[in-house]
Amino acid sequence: MGHRVLVNNRMDLSLSKLRSITETLPPELQGHLERVRKVAIRLAERHKVDRLKVELGSLGHDIYRAHDEECLLSLAKSKKIHISPIEECLPIMLHGPLAAIRIEEECDITDPDVLQAVRWHTTACPSMNKVGLIVFLADKIEPAKLTGIKYLATVAKIAENSLESAVLRYLTEDITWRLKNENLVHPAAIEARNDLLKILS
Ligand SMILES: [Fe+2]
Ligand SMILES: [Fe+2]
View (cartoon, rainbow, N blue to C red):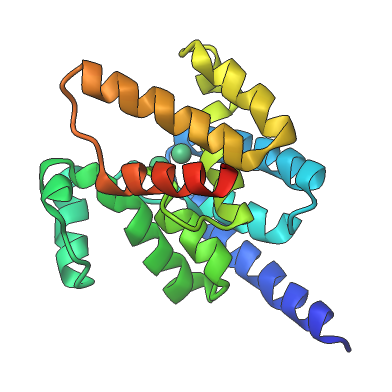
């Protein structure tokens, strides 16, 4: 049996373990995960990115999204995650990092692309891999969210041609909105945008 087949078998097993976690989540959240999965798989096919990795990232990204902030903070402390000042203010920001830890521990997902995608799906980060770019975008442009904010349709259109340009556009719009509305901006979002500007110049 080739290495590739073995890796895929292991990832299939991880996928079924992950499914047994997502099946316990609230129905609205399961709906979001399923929509993100569909958008992400389509983007993966279009940009020739590994479908299984994208599927694992999509289904795993929000497994802690329905947990309350107190729970996220205490989980982060028990997992010894570094809690930055912005995460102290907005503990919901911890749901990605916590999800990455859980899918590694409980679903044996060790692929660094998938773990990075899940960990950084809220803010993006510098040097995002293609799986991460796709999960980030699919999370923002899934059909239920697409109707809410005007610029998302543009982001979705750009994503057809360039994942990097689409994430850059999203971050520019999102950070601009946050600045105008006196909102906090996560440093990782700024760093991700700087990195994409450099890559795309
Ligand atoms: Fe999320
Ligand atoms: Fe999400």
